[in-house]
Length: 627
Image (cartoon, rainbow, N blue to C red; front, side, top):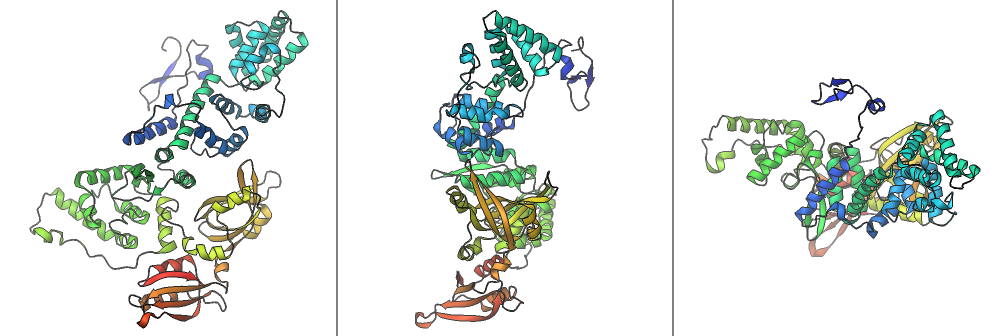
């Protein structure tokens, strides 16, 4: 290095670097290598670790390359998280191409780039016999058979020059470089050389000239096959993992995106499609990172404590170390007495509480959040006492006499509980705000996305759907400058994206705010195995709840019902507008002689998810029933 190129010392590195860029280091006499750090290799490595724990580890390099499940997965386009194959456009192409071999995956990865992309449809049509395969010249059939006559790889360019024009390997490599750089004088020289060499092999000048021009056109885009094949193998390995061991696939994939809640939400929805449970974080079961649990041959992903917002991976590693050393946490005070407040601060405690990580030892999330200052003060005092090695004067049960008494507060219920969970996790994990509204929505002929997709694939086009707005992205049309929007909705069965054209967006913009519960009328279009939704109209869900035809029966037990608790909950949902809201009645069971009485409650009420969740948590409530 010191002999051939000027160097400089980057202060952030211990390795000297060339002052020449990659274009000039080779003429100076160096060889350039690219070393790519692929996180996919780490995904595969972590998945192997999970599989080893249950004796199911595989050697990735000895997987059967004819695995039917893997190719079925790719043909379905369900390749979120599969290396090189997860973009929407790539998934659409996979459905059309229906790859059946590692060679076809290699070709797809090479074709799916600017330039050669225009040949994808030609390749597919020739593969399925819809177009005739053209090998350019009979002598080139062997070189182009694998790619149905389409020039894809740099190696093919070199081989064509050798066979058709008598190039040596060294000359063929110079031709490849010349075609990639597109220098006119060099290309003119190579054209003369190619035509002359082809003439010596009895190929007419007109034919060899046109072949040279065609080769030159695609050589500029040509991909190095050995590079593409290495990528294709990793694509196959991650595809095999997802198709055959989806639990370990999702745990490993989520682990590599631990701090990216948007990507975690995508994996969570995809895991639901693959029937892989993702269990909510639990301080006594979860790890700092994503993990896998197997019970009775049923696997699940354990959500990472370190993936909760404002918590931190290192802090959670400390918590896991404490748990593994001293056993499971008995209650919230046991947790506070054992952890270091320098690792688990107030923000971390609040995040864990909102995410539901303490539910197994203290289910009242609201109590923990609202009294976090008191709890952290206790944690710090215990830590200070531990640090000073003072021993309590009190023995036995009196050792915890200093534990603070927490004020009694009503726990969060329904949407309020889930909204706090959303702020900590980034998406709905343990439930959905519309869960309590399912029967009312069904009565309004609302179709959830899990049902809408197969219906759309079978030809249905118009749907009434509902969801909570997760995000809205407005963009300007390149042609007209008018704004349109992509809006992502979440319903109890999954998420769906809906495109609102300019006219519809102007009409619905105020309704489509993140966090809003919305009824949306859509048109669905199914093409190449992909369903897309287009918004026609949207309205607030309150409009549904104000429908006079909706009513609610609250079934309660006469022995355990608390009239005051029910009254307080209903008062918060009383509708102030005349004629708005639904009617409510009590169905009281367990009276003398087994009688049941229905009592109609005066007034009208907003029968939304918040009220339903609050009512379900009231003492003595057995069930709710839409009337």
